[in-house]
Length: 447
Ligand SMILES: [Zn+2]
Image (cartoon, rainbow, N blue to C red; front, side, top):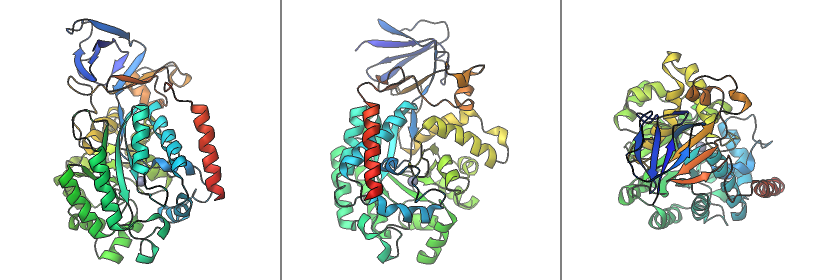
């Protein structure tokens, strides 16, 4: 396959690549120093002088189906538990057709913001939505975005002392059989994988300990990652103490989850000692600054976790607690929230925020082939132009992306293929998709 030289970018987040990168067969094959020519023969040239280039952004926590309930009147201005209880019955009526459009909407939004790999935590399997994972894989393949689909689960409903209603839970046997089915069918452990599966019981207040343990065993067997929500709110600590007589982290340990396969969403209400244990076991944490601010859940202790060696990735979270799916916005919010929460605000920079969303996120997903612009890595790139009004007068191009609030990538490449060109996704009719999604959302409101 012909090599492509992305020549002389305005700025690039990479070492020794000021002259750009050469891409061939889906990989970065060469980083070119400033004013140099590539050593790779017969390169085609793409003039990148107007582009700021960063590694493709990696979103490590989302609930794409929630794009159907953005700014929902029954949910806005509520804390986590009442917010969930208001929305579960609404979500129980989502159809397969609506899910397909909702997933397309969320993934398209992510792609257009520079995201090249998305992890979606789907734990909602009411009757009629049993093929949710298959639908997500199908949509991701059509858009060309890499995806880790998290086969979520809930098996404790209100009658068992859990939070969700009966209509959205499944029994453990059904869940585990489907976990095995989707792992066998879709989980690709090879370098450059487009689709991976992870196992993701929803949270300690919606699944049984047996199910957590069985998922850890399956993860070992199929070599996949484990994910759940943990320590998001103070309510959750109280629930665990009341029901299990221990804090959420002990619960995780008892289930066999304190290990490097695991990454957690939120991770806010940990003590320093718990952060040290997470770091010791290399458990990752997906920081979701926008969602945590919206639900007033608190600050993730990213500084303490990182000091102890826990990888920190970034996530937008579901579109009912962050009503937008924009990774650049999440990076900007990570900068702001970490400035507010860290002891020394000036130790957290725009580069740190960008690295959380790239190298940090890749580590959370257990991948060393993405998240960085370097020779041998996958050619996943997000490219922004600084020709919008919001950038007028900006100096440092990489700082401008974060500080001026870049929202929209001009070009996005996944595995060497252009998936966004001139700010649009080729072949996707956004107007028609938006119209269908609004129709599904209205039907859901009336159901
Ligand atoms: Zn979540």
